[in-house]
Image (tube, rainbow, N blue to C red; front, side, top):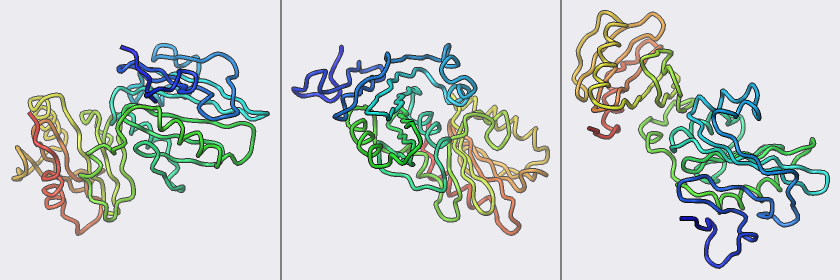
Length: 283
């Protein structure tokens, strides 16, 4: 059943976005007065994204990209290329967002999180990632703020950050992001959140079932060799690796997590216990 995302008594022309509950809305140039559409709207899926993105497509596909709908809007000599991508779930969309963030610049509360720089703006909201690229050269910050505010009103999705972000302590944390594959550089840890600290790394990976998570634990034991059992969650062990340092890895239901410590004098066990307490129980 089709519905108007911006709702109430607005017409489609005024609203600028029409979306089914299970598909991404289509950006429209009339969301901000004075802008008009330049060229046809565009739609891409994973099979043909390379036609649009060329070498950059892989950066989208690695996060589970499903579909992109976009339009180019023009006002005078200025063009804004607006693309809205559906990644299927909020974690993957947030992963795409963090892969684009400039850590030297602040983020803003647009959707769940956003960032605006002179010629570019983007935000994440639920399963969607919205981005705007401005041409030609110049500082379009004020106009980009107007556009992101308008788009935020019509793009559906949660404005809450992924719950996993709250599991990792903020103290001494340098970064926190969704890693789409090979967490800690280990293929067996397929996809999960990883936080970089002054003293090492923390991670949490979600497996399909508790049984598959237990299989991951067994593979990790074989990978690290000598391990020592530890009482955390459903099972845990300590180990030492020449590249990752001192490790403590636990399983709690479908989750596998822990710490890899590179700094002497820091114990991964109490840190892992605290992290495990934050991770929800799953079946």
